[in-house]
Image (cartoon, rainbow, N blue to C red):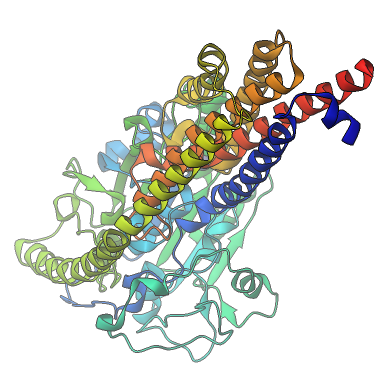
Length: 584
Ligand SMILES: [Zn+2]
């Protein structure tokens, strides 16, 4: 090596040193950004949102019970337009209400199971993605049903739903849902419901392994929110267990059917397969609900979200957000239409049908317009709803404004951090340029540096727009970005090496590679730094759809850019050493 360094001109040592420095800086950036990308989906989750720490608001208007039993059916992933011309659903529409409802962003399943059963949208429930795997300490329909001395049952071919609503086993708390499983303590901690003391720092992320392990443990001190829960994932299992529950006596029966969503992910919402799966689901429901008596009982059928034509959901596309809302039977006003209904309105509507208080953390309203009720009942319910919604909105608004203040207070600091880092990188570059360790070759930079970014963002945009619905399969946003990043990396690497191939001196060639490396790292790191400055975790408010894609995208871009730098420099160093060896 000594001989080698002597052999070339003076700047050689500096050129190699600069390459190593860039490798180290890129490596640190890549690890940090990679970890941020990995954690992104989990950072969206909140174990204990502000509402879960507030006492449920339970004004009970004591209106008469309208139905003996209520069946709430969730056909996972069934979008509105494809829910027509299904014999059983259409028959229920003819006998009752043919309406639609809006899902809530982010339009993933777990968040919207909570929307439907607790009446709390993802923004306020803290359940923002399908990575949420710990129980939700929010008052639910099941809690209200059991507090009223009634029974709740469920049938599903998908195991997640009961897990989201597990309750601490003892002491038995049904009136006040204990703020439970707050991560650090294994016992259910019963805190005072003093909302004033809430501060945003309590929002621990859900990837707390201890919490997840505690929930999964067979001997966990938790119990099902249902008196009877049947998980039957085998073919025919859903209708079999649904039928058994219909023959039973539970006043609230929740049914969740997963097959349509699976077909949407595999083949897209516009596919034949999706259509076939919907027909099969319709048939399974007809069998499960065959013996219910609509003169005494009520059925509500909806979906947690729809699907894009090519498959996928999570964003705010109309085909993803608009789902069927079908209701029929006792207490339902035949031929009526729900006005501007949302999934969070279903829980209070079901509570009204059963004549019980609505779930106490809910933000939705009773859909009185589709119920066969007199003016007095309608008014009493609406007044109770207003009271509850006002109380809960105040809790959510306070948490959001506290979080916003916190983010704003630290934003200037974060921005100065990013700017400071940029200035230091610039000074480093100037120093290296003066020592001829880095050469910024405009022609070369114009070709190779944009190659990665153009390819990367073009792939994301082409594959499915900048919306979380871009994932056709269920999965982690950052993992998908990494795949696109890998493709873009190969393209840039080829451009880099092609651009560098004609350089005569070895030192000059490596110095130009350093120039590409510096520029690539800067262009990747500054947007990632700014994304961090403007949307730092934990996310009390959910970033808008475009940012839900761009935040992990810029993080993954840093990791990819750093790997590209490393590969380019490695190839250059190998060529450098090899040529020096031959020359000798
Ligand atoms: Zn899905």
